[in-house]
Image 1 (cartoon, one colour):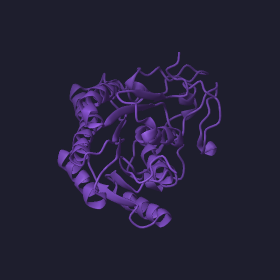
Image 2 (cartoon, rainbow, N blue to C red):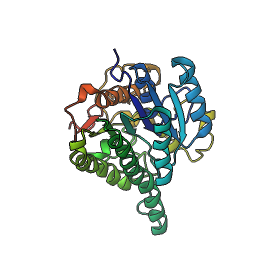
Image 3 (cartoon, rainbow, N blue to C red):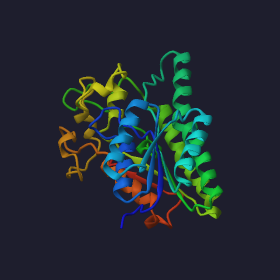
Image 4 (cartoon, helix red, strand yellow):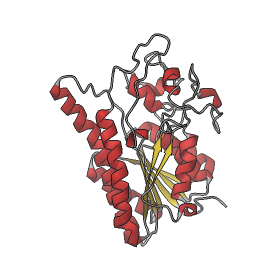
Length: 309
């Protein structure tokens, strides 16, 4: 018996930009199927990688276990179509991971027009995109009387700001490129949205929660720190000369071994480590499952101790 036996799961931002290395979305898709999901809808904007991922999943689990849906979550019509595809393929949706998101260079102190441009872009995906997914996903659940689970991917920056990341040997600040002010504002907003939606949808038996990951070793970080994001699929590593992940890892005090993927974990020069996608996917599947049937309006912070101090 699996945690999601017979259930249908939708995951936005479900594709990994670097094949061979999971994102939080792709890891959750894999975990959902491993836990018995009847079907998963892989939603993303990268059609080639998305279709390849679905083929891989159907080859492993059997035809029809996964379908791909091109979805730009910043466009409400795209999100509405996502759930039309879901209904056509599987009839219902039982669980949704609102995972699509971006981390960008904000340069808050820079040119005002650039700040506002950055604001509009971040908001359209990290905030509006999640709202649209919650809106149309919950409507499909209510249409069929499904007492489902909707999980919003927030961040540690949905509960706290970001400490300075400096080279402890030289004192050099390592993240001059982005301030995360707008990102942090939006991720806090998702926590509030989950609480309001949890109350709004409680009478329908629909649960809404957030997960708040710390810094996880995913292709998203590669995209965030690299100037050229267009050819990430050609990469064969999550490491990059643009950023010292070992310094970021220091912000997580926990120094144990991860469940999987030990070989890709960056460990801090002064203790601590990065997280891996499996360490988010497994708690996410728990919150989507009936084992979490009395949990709603809550946030689960998974951060290796970042916010403990």
